[in-house]
Image 1: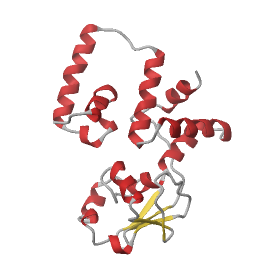
Image 2: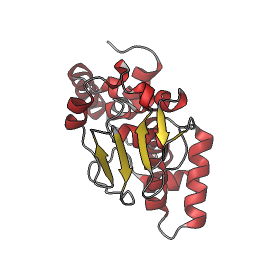
Image 3: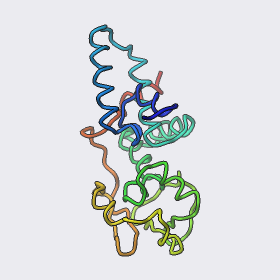
Image 4: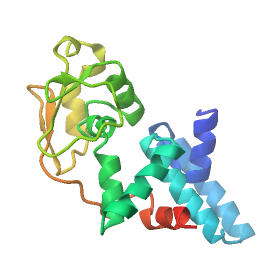
Length: 202
């Protein structure tokens, strides 16, 4: 059973926010809670909907309020398509790329791998999880870390992971490369970026 803040956050925002909440037990609990909400009725305010979507985005990527606010501001100021710019900025964080490549089971673990020096960017060790990975950059595992239990069963894990089309992985070298820009599609997304921009535009 999940306990503590993460479980409470999942109850508010949905199980997709944290991997630990993606269990059958949690889903059944949420289904029962949903029936109770329908029975009592009531619709959330615009502000509450926007806040929920903002929190979903923030907790999904494991970033601070200050970071997300800055990303939103930069996306609105410097892009004609702020939604694509924001999602692209989040997706190309080094920790997220490590996670998307299947090198880590969760984004939290991906952040730890980067912070502890297990990950190389273009053959140089980088310990900043928020660093923006760019087109043609190569993300790999440090040679001395390849034998670590952290990377055991990597082939099986990666085969089960859904590697985005904007990334290419080389399992033999335990590395991946950014081959195109991430594209946002609403299908499959657990949050609504438009609501996030509405929240910060108040």
